[in-house]
Structures are given as structure tokens and as C-alpha cells.
Length: 432
Ligand code: UDX
Image (cartoon, rainbow, N blue to C red; front, top):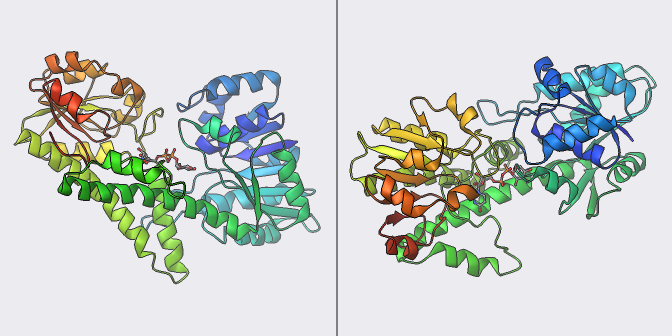
């Protein structure tokens, strides 16, 4: 099939490359001319394992191309996906100005039937707005359908998640739209849930908010574990074996970050509020998440006695491993709080240093974890990259001024670190 994807951000580009992998002809469109220029030179503007290679392969085969013109994509395609950003406004609501503009341009360029699919995460009822806007702007007698097809891609594993999803959700209003979307995804073996558009829109916000809730729940349990002298890792293991609960997303730590969970949680609270429901449960999940960062800083302060004039080695900056994404990364707030208290920062991240430079003022960026540890008063673990989990602890111990590790991701066994002579503090486990 012939597809256009409007928006070559994270979701758009992964979706475009993966549809090409499934054998479709894809045009990826963006209004950022420099991005399109770079993509034409086969440069992917962010780090996602396997993506650059996939993009190169399909551009060479002629299945994937890039354009700055929505009209060009609409002319050439049967299906048009909207995958542009819906950044949060000051009040936490999603800003849909970009979507509206794109929809107007699509409508004006349509000459025959087109299926317009929302891929971006949007509030429930956006589908109706899209339909109304197209009705108003399109030429008379041009038939069209609107559909919702939310994505559930995790950064760092986005290609795998696209090609091997737990489920595919499509929200449609017509049998024709359903048939087209079924055909598009025919190459993927996964349950396909067909709903109305509003339910599909809600599935996305309800899923991400539930994941956020799960993380905040285990972080709250971690508080109780610490106070009681229990171990949150064992508690999570025991809970997770119950098939109704599941072990995933029960890792206690410094809380969730990234461009999806915090934003979608906030947006869902706002959507519910507008619809007349006060979603207090989700507000509390947000509060717990914020407090995890403060708790971590207090743990660092406790370990160092005074933070002022101390040097702190920071292991990991990205909001999670296998990505260079720094958006809403807990590291940014944690480092700001530490600097406020007078600390000097020596930071290391395997991929995110480039993006972190603009965000973290006055931090020294190091070549590796060992350079960060050299001469520092303690090491804090912020992102659980594999490389960080595998660090040579004996070497780290020699390099640090004092053998103190404060671990925000529960990477190590406390007894092992204690046996090596470290003072080791983690989350929700008795401090040895
Ligand atoms: C998320 C959803 O998983 C995905 O389905 C959606 O489409 C986009 O948002 P992503 O933002 O890539 O994906 O990150 P995810 O892997 O979900 O992690 C989010 C944050 O939660 C990270 O900061 C991570 O460190 C944290 N986290 C995750 C925990 O603190 N504990 C956990 O148990 C799991």
C-alpha cells in the first residue's frame, strides 16, 4: 500500500521505516527542512537501535522517501498517518495546534478517497475534531475516513515493539477503514483490537497512565519496605508472579521520566477533569513520582553529611537505558537540586551526553564512568545502562575519594557491595 507519515519524530520515523519493512511504499514528511535534508542523506536525528540501518536499507530499495510537502504525500498515498508531536501546554493539556494545521493542509490537498489515521497521542474526541475540520476544508464530494491507531513503542526497543506488538489497536468508523488498516498490518502476527475511535484514543492514555501508576505504586511500597526493614525487590518479585499483576513496571527507583509517561499522565488528568471527573488517583501517582527525586537527593545528603563543595559522579543521564533522550529525564532535576546544594557534578552517559550538554549547566561531562568517579566523593546511579551495571567496582572503589554508592535503580545486591567495602544505599531495601 502507499502510505504517508506526517511528522518524522521518534514515532513517525520508526513507523515509516517499519511499514517499509512490511513491504509498503512510505513517504515520511516533516515541515523541518533541515531534518528532511539530513534524512535524505540517511542521517537519523536521534539514537534508536537498528533504525538507521533499516532506514538506509529501505531508502536504497526505493520503498522509503522523505519530503517537506504534505500535499505531495496526500497526492501519492492512500493512507495518511498523523504522527506529529502533541507537546504539553503550561496547564498540562496536549497542544493540538500542530494537528489542526496538518489536518487542514491534508483536507485541501485531497482529490479522491483518503484514510486519515491519528498516530499521535491525542485526547479522546480528537477524531471528531479531525473529521469536522476535514469536512469544512476539503473540496466537495471527496470521500474520506478518519481512524485512530495509537502506538505503544518503547524507546530503545521501538522496532521490536512495532514488529512484535502485544496488540494492535484500531479505532474506526467504517468497514472500509477497518479493511485498509487490517491490510496494512497483515504482516504482523498480533491480536488486533477493533473499536470505535474514542475508545482507541482512550486506550492509549489509560494504558500509559496505568504504567505510571504501577511505577508509583511500587515506589510507595518501597517507602514502606524501607521503614519496615523489608526488601522491595523481593516484594516485587513475589507480587509479580501473580499473573494478574505481572512483574513488569514494578522496578522501584527515582521515578519515571521521558516524553510519554509524565506527559500522558498529566494530559489524562486534564482530559478527565474537562469531562467532569477528578482523577485523584493519577494526581497522587504524579506526586509520588516527583517526591522520588527529592527522596534520592536526601539519601545522597545523608550519605555525604554535607553536599556543599562535594564532587558527585553521576552514572547515566538519559531517562532510561538504550536511548539518548533527555526529555523529562529525572537526572535533570536531581542534578539541579544537587548543584543548588553546592555540589560539583562529574557526569557520564553512554549516549546522551550530546543532548545533556544544553540542559545541564556547569556539569563536567566525562569520557567514561571511571573518569567520572576519579576523585569524586560518591557515585550515584541514575540510569541503569548495561555498561553501568557491568562497571568494574574494584576500579571504581580505588578511584572514588570515599567508597560510597547511592543507587537510584537498585542495580546491585546490597550484601555484595557491603562485602566489597562500599557504603551502599539504594531504594526500598534495608541500608547496609
Ligand atoms: C512508554 C510506554 O512504555 C510506551 O508503551 C509508550 O508508547 C510510550 O511511553 P517509554 O517512554 O519509551 O515508553 O519508556 P518506558 O520504558 O515505559 O519507561 C518510562 C520511565 O519509567 C523510564 O524513566 C523508566 O526508567 C521508568 N520505569 C519503568 C521505572 O522507574 N520503573 C519501572 O518498573 C519501569
